[in-house]
Image 1 (cartoon, rainbow, N blue to C red):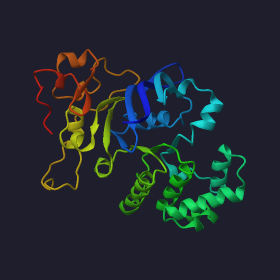
Image 2 (image 1 turned 30 degrees about the horizontal axis):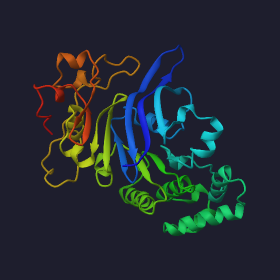
Image 3 (image 1 turned 90 degrees about the vertical axis):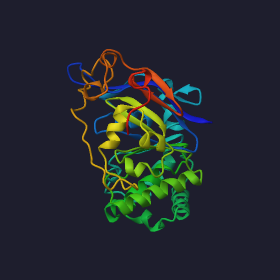
Length: 333
């Protein structure tokens, strides 16, 4: 299967005044395959938005890449010339729908101005009229009213503003679209419309793959192909969506599923269970598995050594428990 993006041992830290570092992304390895939706989920503060900014190449100080590679084709984007990266990767190969996207538009500019800026930044030979016509055709193809081009951001509803942001982000037909919590500020009806738009973009091959970052697992469950569960800057488990959420292998995944109410059949009588303790301080994370202080299954090895990745069927997990005879049968879900 064709892989559009490969992250290998990716590390991204926040550098604080005084020299301290927050290890927001610390050794993450994953790949994005063509024609798939890869979900990334976890508690607030787990590093998923920091990972999104690295994957989308939108990170700025104090966040910086500390190590690892991100491959597009066979080339590491972190070693690319800045001008080449701007012209040939950002916006054209990888594009981003940022967190808080509804507040990302300048309220003094009409939507048509954003369209012209995006297209002519990469193709200066295209006229303003042609750029607007290209956007008009894209809106029509996606069933959105072309009148929005003549409106200011404050004249759009929250749901429409979010959809317009997605259209602007995909005008150059990027292969990879990074969506950082694009539905978090929307009502349920607007969430559904946004998801349909993203699936249309994928189905029509306007984009080729989606990374969808969210804390709303019940939403992600209905359209993602695979999911990566993050905890304290690291991956806990990654694999096919239904396998991971309905038959979790990692204790953290199991605890996360147990802490949520879903509208699934047979969950009416389910009692929500909180996860004891709090996430670790990423300025000084635990030496071993970062979930070990909160894990009821933790053994001595968990507290002294970081777990290696282990293949379990179609997924990968980072857990010593699943690799020992003491808990080889898995974690109760």
